[in-house]
Every structure is written in C-alpha cells, then in structure tokens.
Image (cartoon, rainbow, N blue to C red; front, side, top):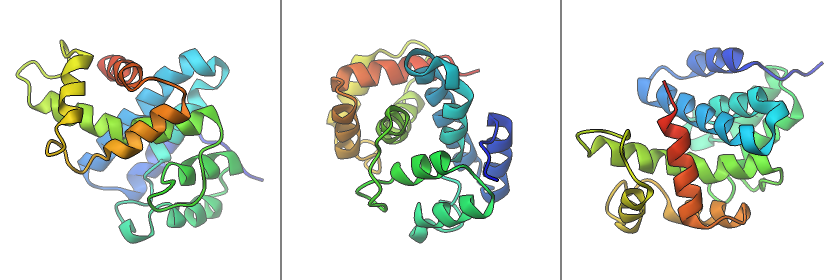
Length: 182
C-alpha cells in the first residue's frame, strides 16, 4: 500500500538522507514555495504540494550522479505513492531525467526549483535580504549569466513556458512566496 507523506514526514525523510544545512534549507524553501503556489492553483492539496517540494532532492546529497533515478527507486522502497514519485523524478526533466512534468504541480516544481536558488543568492547580496527585494532586482540578476551561474536560466525559462506564464510573473510570484517564509 503506497502513501503520501505529510509535510512533516517529508521533511523528516529529507533530513534522514541529507545532512548539509544548505540542502535541508533548499528543501524547506521549495516546499514552502510549492505550498504558496498550491493556495492559488490546487487549494485542496496544499500539504501534498509541500511534501513534493520537501522531497524533490531527497537523493541529491548522497547520490548526485544518480539524481532523480535514485529518488525513483528510493521513494518506491519507502512505499511512496506513484504521484509523488513522478513529481520528484520529473523535476529533473532534460537534466537528469526523461520524465516530463505533466501535472501543474510538477510544472511549478520544475520552474521554481532553480529560481528559488537564484532569488536566494540575490537576497544574500543585499543588506536587507529579501524583505524589500523587487522582482526587477531578480530580473537583473537573471540576465547576469555570471551571477549564480549554477542556476539554469534555460530551465527557469522553460518552466515559465510550461506554465504559460511570463518570466517576470513567475519571478514575482516565486519571490512573493519566498518572502512569506518564517
């Protein structure tokens, strides 16, 4: 019998397989952003969206060369629901997975995973952090390919297209979501 974990269970599992604070904080950020997007796009499944965000990189720290494929087998062994597995594996589409995001939730995960990293890096450069950051500041950093070079602009653009969203709108919504983190 498969199951869908609560956000608390998902965070616990993520912490079991990831020890670096950076990876745990990234999972928390993505989980939070997913929950914020769910409020508008799928309000009956907020906890599900959060759990997917929290689990999306469960395999990355221990098995970076097998990212997404290891998550597939690991989540199966843990008894996760197929919907969770597909969502987690599809966030690496075109990078380390050939499983395409199909559900709106999967497309949001695909689009915001890299973007949260870019926004987080931009916030670190500001004395006030993210609190008064405007989307135009993020757009400026987005255009600077040397800034946070590990955050793929192509993936972010592709994600915005999947969501039929302008890049500026995706940036604004993701930034707003990140600003609501405690």
